[in-house]
Each structure stands twice: as C-alpha cells, then as structure tokens.
Length: 188
Image (cartoon, rainbow, N blue to C red; front, side, top):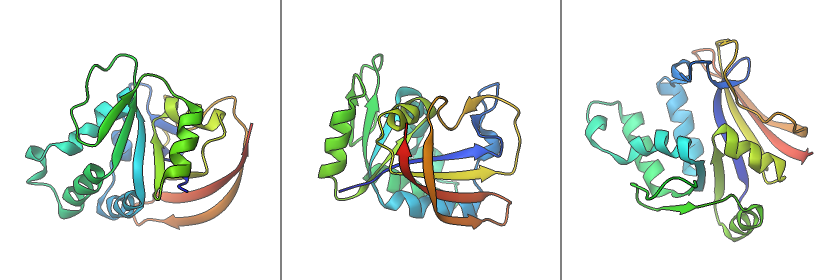
C-alpha cells in the first residue's frame, strides 16, 4: 500500500506563491534539487490539479534541458517515469506520457489507488492538496521551507483543516532551506 504525500516548496511564512503568483523564491539550488530527485524516486503516481500539471509538464520536453545541470536532467527522467493523474474540468487533453485526466476528485478512488499501489503517491498544488487533507487522505507532509518571507499569496497548507502531526525527519541545507517531514496522525 502506498502513502499519499503532500510535498511542496514554501516560503517561511507558508506560501507556495507570492501575491503576484511568482514562486521564483523557491527555485532549488543543486543540493535541494538532488534532495527532490531522491524524494521523487519513491513516487509511483503524482496527483495534480490543472495549474500544477501545466507547470510541471515542462519536464516532458528535452529541448530546454540540454544546457541544464545533470541534477536537473535527472529529475526530468524521474518525473517522466511516474504516472500522473490530472484533475480538471477544463483540460481537453494531456500532452505528457503516462498521464490521464479525471474530471472530479473522488476520495474513494484515491483511497483505492493508494491501496493498490506498490509505491507512494504524491499530491501537488494547494487546491488539490487541501482537498486531499479534507478527506483524510494525506499520510505525510513534506515541506521545504525557503529562507524568505513573501507576506502573502497562495497558502501552502489548507485553511479550515486541523491536522495532528508527528515529526519524522528534518534537515538543513547549505542555502538555508529547511526540510521537514511529518506523518499526519489525524486531520479534521
């Protein structure tokens, strides 16, 4: 059985994006990128909302990768090897391999996906992540806290949800980013 892991880069004050929609503050350096590569190796299926999918699908294209560091090129391969489920009512088709569209989020279907999976699953994006938290589907929360305060924007964690957590792991990177991994004991 796979665990559903909510994973994100976030500002220290808890935002995925600033008020203008920018997330450039969270672009990983080589050490942090290598961490994400290792994390993503354990993911068999990624669950995305439309916006997150549109952001992530750049990893399907090789053209821009030729001049990138090896750690970035390696991530592209890891991303391509995972299955992807995109939840969207507006997307007509997907442009990446190993990807399917679901028109609505079905908590029972995600539970079955977890039960049938030999690998962990990830959920990305604040809206879909919040939905997974609200349905009690998230088993772990992995956050990389970037050393910046942006003062507002898109919250990384859902509002109106309380979750009791247990710290499983943590690490400090040379650039000041801090990794925390928590088990979700109960969400209400």
